[in-house]
Amino acid sequence: GAGVSQSPRYKVAKRGQDVALRCDPISGHVSLFWYQQALGQGPEFLTYFQNEAQLDKSGLPSDRFFAERPEGSVSTLKIQRTQQEDSAVYLCASSLSGEGRRLYNEQFFGPGTRLTVL
Amino acid sequence: GQQLNQSPQSMFIQEGEDVSMNCTSSSIFNTWLWYKQDPGEGPVLLIALYKAGELTSNGRLTAQFGITRKDSFLNISASIPSDVGIYFCAGQDNNAGNMLTFGGGTRLMVKP
Image 1 (spheres, rainbow over the protein chains, first blue to last red):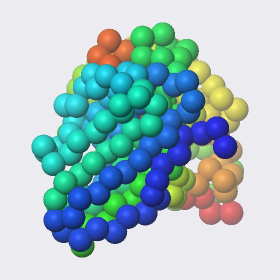
Image 2: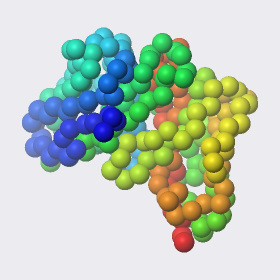
Image 3: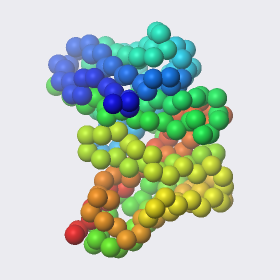
């Protein structure tokens, strides 16, 4: 389909393991966002890209979290030395524009990757 | 991290009843949005509000952007079983990167 896709859909990691989560945004979308959703809570902002530039990473909880979007399309969220508190659903969203033009700001979400750290 | 205050946390209603949920914030937003999330899926946008005082409808859904820009409500009329899910409000500051700040969600359960 033409929506945002994420892989893997489920990931189980042992504590201390590194993981990489992939997001394929809608083709042509300029902006890409990562959110973390803990069980029973609303999503929380992690980081934001406009094309390949990471414009805001203020929501990343620690320096173990790293995101990249080297060619301005696919993005990867990497978590090093995973901890149990990293267990959550990681959502990716993309929008057509990031220029404040409201009609193009709608964020379309992927299905998320459920990460479980044992 | 910051989240909006959303209430109620859950509702269990009879099919055909009307539903109301609301969201408040200590910060001003220039856009308010309402999303629905089904199990195993990402949030899907239901209604977007861009102006203080704005009242917008989408089928059986009606939402309003509060005058103070710090609150919003969502009404669902004549609920049906497929309305079941988790509803989230979200505030957006278009002058600060467009990231969304979400409420904690309202879990809606509908009894046929």
